[in-house]
Length: 386
Image 1: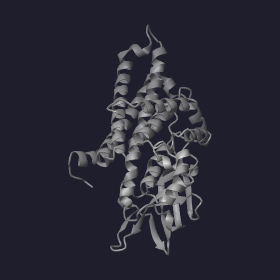
Image 2: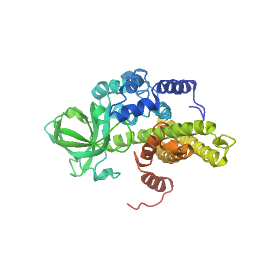
Image 3: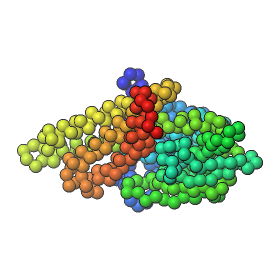
Image 4: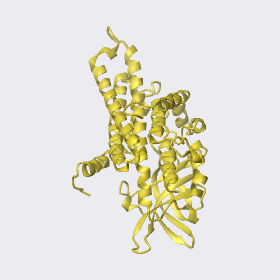
């Protein structure tokens, strides 16, 4: 991307993803979700076409592009009503961390499958009593000879039932101080001692949420990703991509809602002109469009900074993008429902199901309040209250 103009390759990728996603769309997505099924066909085709692994290194089967391209894929799929949450998790968080910090053997084992979609990897950091405070994580790993023994639990872990493995954030004891520090482990989902239960959500989604339990799970030495001592840096390497992808999903959802609303108000006629001619309808939609486009611009900035290797700059922009996109998306979806009136709450028009889903962007992967804390402290230099 040069300035504000996407390259021909990026424009072509956007067009190709849009065309593929249109073949599935929201009807397919909701049908799968309501039947308790997964979007396996869409995931497999996206993988075959190289969309899922577009950000991963070419030598491991990826597209060799960057977070900009992966966020573009996410945005276009969301705009078509087919946002796949595991895009945030499998290639963006896990693929990035393993590509940057994994051993050669780990890269060879996991990255080609993540890139072509034949392997899906979940990511487990959140705990019942930790939330946004990752320093309170209690899932611990201790050494037993050359093996590791993992114990603890996680909550709100996406797509475990679709995954072949989970990248688990645990803690290990420092040899010198005894203090616990973060460590990352790849745990195949068929590992003895690991179990999970589904969390019933009101969000209509083909991707489910789970609580995970690790009961003295024995892992080989090579389950540890990268260096035991650099885990905090490795963990943060996956968080900027997570925020950028969260913003991309929200931007796409905002576009989806605006398309639904504008299509409806152009043709819905109650008095002399279509209702879209009334400023009470047109001005809020115009405002929504502005807000979504502004959020998209910050998302593009964050992705460009990340791909350029500016991690500090990318962190600020990624948090801002995630905040802005979440707010813009929620408002656009709410306005779309209002524009459609009673039709906005029917299954037929497909916008009511987006109401609860749109709230996710204000809550995950980091709450809007924690984003405001981050910006207050790092951008404005204000003192911390916690």
